[in-house]
Image (spheres, rainbow, N blue to C red):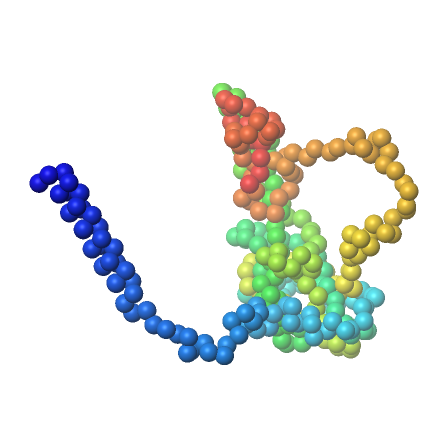
Length: 288
């Protein structure tokens, strides 16, 4: 067969294949226009299918006046599976503990927790919060509190001058944290509604034991936006030469404490901007 004949045959075969594909793809395609007749497809559907959201919870109490006083919880007045120790209340990883709280003013409160971690599996402490026996919103079922980790010793070098990364060990120290969204979708601590008078606060363990050293209901802090902050500052004040030239450099890999054992120092040779820097040796100079 001549070259021209082959080209013609190839062209015909390609055309047949294309027509066949178009026909196959067209089979089984139904017209669903009748199904969606009269439906507003441009409507905002955010939140549909989600119940008990934090935004919906806040909206219920948005008109309440701000509270002004902290309310400490009497840790010793508890009910449930817990062990009172000298350092606080030990709650196991299968515990459920309830405290009665006398609230002088109904409103929204942040909850501040003072706690001490204990040796266990080394993962974050996780608790579910119930107020007056009910879960206030879905996010309150996964409240996480981190541990403290540090280098076991100093960074050493091998006989080639490469850094040897120290192991991570846990430090058991008292910490303070607010009940908040662990995923970071809500940047401020959660606000919880408490009625005036007697309320109950229940912590149900999901993961890990912990010693609770204090629980306090605190007024919700309202921060001004930047425009309001700027307007409140003295006017006509110019920056000093010292302020213009001030800079502070912090080497992240030198952190003394970390919230997870995976945040150990690592090395990076991909950029000359990392400090310290070496093109031929392993130098710990970055964090993940």
